[in-house]
Image (cartoon, rainbow, N blue to C red; front, top):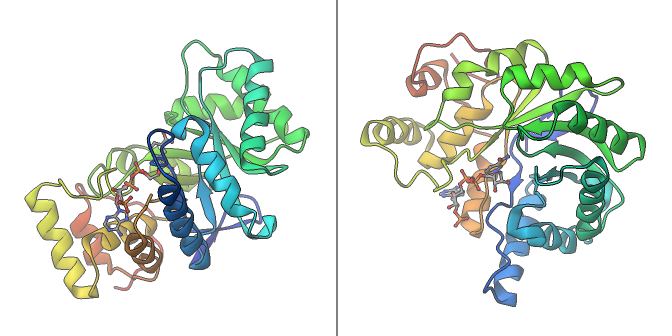
Length: 286
Ligand SMILES: NC(=O)c1ccc[n+]([C@@H]2O[C@H](COP(=O)([O-])OP(=O)(O)OC[C@H]3O[C@@H](n4cnc5c(N)ncnc54)[C@H](OP(=O)(O)O)[C@@H]3O)[C@@H](O)[C@H]2O)c1
């Protein structure tokens, strides 16, 4: 699995990690959770050692399942991201939420802790104070945000005294290119990682329009790949972009890991852009 340097840190992170949004708390049997663990374990074995979770996913169940699985590994081999859901309004309850996440994950520290969404009723300043204190207390190594606009991101960074935000986790895919065209250049210029969530449009690109499907299929044929693999390869070809597809099914996990080795040509990348772009690209053949 190809890795990149995590922004200005010396840390390496895989270009493709694993999402856990789908892990449900309700009406599921043991077999379902075992299947999830098998999928995540297979992903880890294939190098997708970045696992993205959140207190919100399955109301804590996703963190619990990840926690059970990662006991099998050396903590240092993994990169665990979780997120603070914006329903905690006081500094004390925000910090308590981080501790509860750590407890569910059964680990001493997170690698990355994000503010899941901006909340107009919680000041960005307070969010940043909490994140910075959590770093000082050793509860997380790095901090970031999710679903912040570039302006909100800049404001957040300005409030930080000793830390830097290393990522903004944003919705981005070949199907939904808004943030790619509107804000990625800022993250590229400032050496900040953009983590693309819902990289397969949340539904595995099963309901995309015919024109996009045809383009993806034509590129997929050149690489003996699936359209989903091409969609992932296209995203991570953009400099400073990593991604975290979610896959319950084992064949999907294996396919996603392989996508990191697909080298698209500049022509193929441009074919899939919805508008002309001068974004920085990596790993392409002319
Ligand atoms: N920060 C945020 O606000 C936010 C919001 C949404 C998501 N996220 C994070 O981003 C992760 C990924 O996004 P997502 O869960 O919305 O959706 P996604 O990864 O875009 O798509 C998931 C869907 O794609 C299917 N799939 C996965 N790999 C495939 C492959 N190789 N071929 C065909 N189909 C494939 C999955 O099927 P199976 O599961 O059946 O295998 C599932 O139906 C989440 O799990 C979560 O960790 C963050």
